[in-house]
Amino acid sequence: MRLFLARHGQTVWNAGRRFQGGSDVALSDLGRAQAEALGRAVRGHRLAAAYVSPLRRALETAEIALQGTAIPVVPLEELRELSLGEWEGFTVDEIRGRDGDPYLAWLRAPHDCPPPGGEPLPDVCARMLRAVEEIGARHANGDDVLIIAHGGVISVYACHLLGMPFNALWRLRVDNCSLTIARPPRVVSLNDTLHLGPELQSPHLQRG
Image (cartoon, rainbow, N blue to C red; front, side):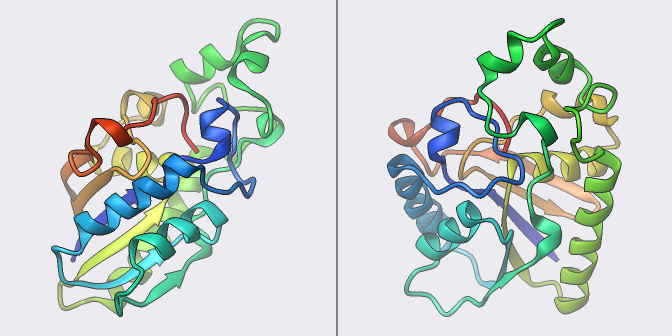
């Protein structure tokens, strides 16, 4: 099985440097254009199905990218973004302004310094692996499969495949509507944004 893992398009909170996590946020105008470009990129492959996070930004990306195709879209709860606990809804600058700059500590060691009330990264990895196992059972013949999810869960899964500690999570870059390709247990490519072109690139501010 070959997995095409796509992050959703830019959201209005991404554009405002605001933490999303499990919050349900719509795509921005740029995010919708990115989703169209993602759709053009994946139509060159024979995708058997698309498995999508139930959060609106992922579902909207899938709807735009796969419009006019017969590719079935299957929401999977395990693909939702990792929770950022008490940080959700706040901007990067607001968190950086707190005592000790917890945002910087989180960037340096996200496993050891998670947001208060945030989802533990090993738990995120466990549910992502359950999702991949379920998808693999449905496509045991080696299909190409699209997953549309989030920067956090894709990065956690890539860390797992690469044997990296979760404290190295944010050394990986997963941009809006990028494609990461895996043939479990191998990573084939990471964060391919060639299909977006310079006009649709969005600043890499935070995961979500």
